[in-house]
Amino acid sequence: MSTTQGSRAEPITTVFTWQVRPGHEADFEEWTQGVTDCVTRFPGSQGVSWLRPEPGHRFHAVLRFSDPQRLTDWLESDERARWHARIEGIATEVRDERQSTTGMESWFRLPGTTVEAPPRWKMVVTTFLGAYPMTLLVQWLVVPVTASWPLPLRAAVFPLVLLPVLTYLLMPGLSRLLRLWLYGTPDS
Image (cartoon, rainbow, N blue to C red; front, side):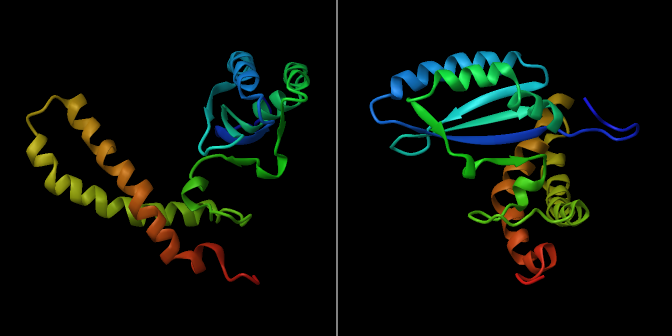
């Protein structure tokens, strides 16, 4: 792993899209089991999830690695090349749909575009603007009600309330509201 002293590599999540030839779905699903076992044993792998979101022949693999270099090592590995050779004639990777994120960028990605995520400091400020009022609200309304609960249970309430509200309501709304500040004008 190549990190400089004092810096810490962040985990990376990548989505791969596969187009499966009609009639080969069972072969593809068998292949996914084998390649999943292989990638989960690969150094730095933090897991694989397979999604079949819509009817048809597209499948998505969500891979998570401990850092970008470990992902690169997997992408360039002989093991991956051998597994890809096995799928020839059954499915093809749709390379122009590959996406990678290292953290907060997923809250700030503009769907259907190739716009870069904003600078991290802007993501931190925007996240603070969403998290602070929610933290205040939880402290005011929930903490008094849960004061007698055991600490692990009380601690679980905060992320169970905060994370879904941030992910599904506040961050999409804030990123729309602050889009000019976050992303600039289209010609900038």
